[in-house]
Image 1 (spheres, rainbow, N blue to C red):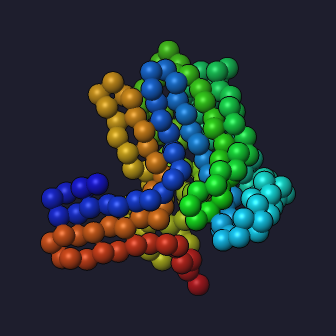
Image 2 (cartoon, rainbow, N blue to C red):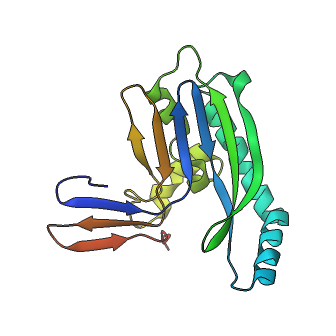
Length: 188
């Protein structure tokens, strides 16, 4: 994805931050990941462990509740529902726990209100989001930049599809510089 003539972003992040099509808004947080195993039996055990992990389920439900709360600020609160909860999906290299939260636009919907109410992605901040966002700059040595933001498109009709930016490379063609931020190192 070109940012400027000389700068590009390449992201393999699978998490859907938000999509909007007509009045329907969907968020699909991912919280809970386990590596795939080469042997089928071992891989099934990994899948089952993730599906039943009390720790992963607790963290996941916290993010689902956070996103439901964020969406209730800008969508019709009565329409918000969890369409899928704790669904474990097998991808090429990992199993991931994904939920789907849906809601309909309210009468006074605005795309700016949607983004302001939900950004940054709850799966990247945890809860309480507002407090975490205040303390992140105090604790981290480097700014996050594009890392833990979102990437996608917004059409003039406000149809959109945005993913959480993680597992991302930035490339500066002019300087021939590639950078990747895999984790943030905290101060002290």
